[in-house]
Image 1 (cartoon, rainbow, N blue to C red):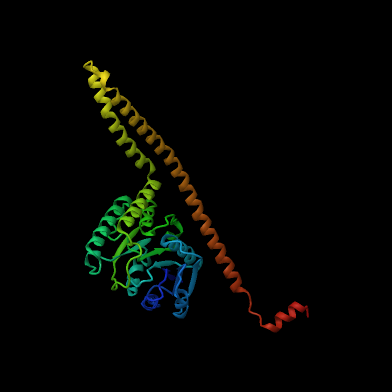
Image 2: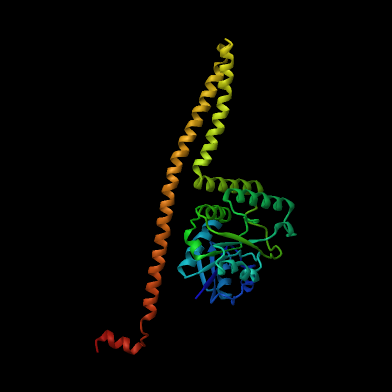
Length: 340
């Protein structure tokens, strides 16, 4: 039996949530059961009440607003504990066409992919501003190079994830999961593909684009942090190499003047070059230590994945045992308690 759970992170989405839910198909070829899970990120409006009125299957709530990335991570854990074989993530603002879910999950059903990202073909989206289109293209280009994955719309939130892939993902960012998830998937050698999907007209302004400079800063920080986490030796090698080359220039300058008996007036070059060269060597050493820490992190992630699998297997065994218990009406229960 294949179960699909569509998770929807929500923050004050009472106006758009009904239409988003209505567009999600409940019958999909190759899937035995489709369920919907809402993750409320501390909404102050009627998002939860609207979700209940619309008949969603599961609702989990954050006590306060913790951000999109952490809400997404909480949703993955909740879907896994509810037995999801495939998890689809979509937005509560009805940006994505719900009818495209069958197309999105087909590569997973065919066992051709672990993760599928919906390609919005941003160049064709009329309500995207030229600046937003350029930023999307630039961000996707950077993520493709950092992750080694050929995904044209790397920041799309419309994506399908297999159960096995979800067990391996560990979202640690507090800003956005889209970039981090792809870099992780690439470094963990998961198979990621994309399919073209449709988008609906804009219903509200993006909450990640309140300030373009701030958005760029946080996106770049996430990219650098995630890449350095998985490739620390390479990152610090290049930092050390650049510092060493810069430091070598004034040292060579000093040696030149020293060879022609004019070194007395250029001792500052030797001091500056020596300092930069020492910092470069320190960067190399930091890279070696970070690389050893990276191997330790991989062991911890392997352990965490196994613990997750064991917990879910134990939960399945417990659920099956509870389901196998005979149903007793009130009278026999009373008699058993009374000992009669």
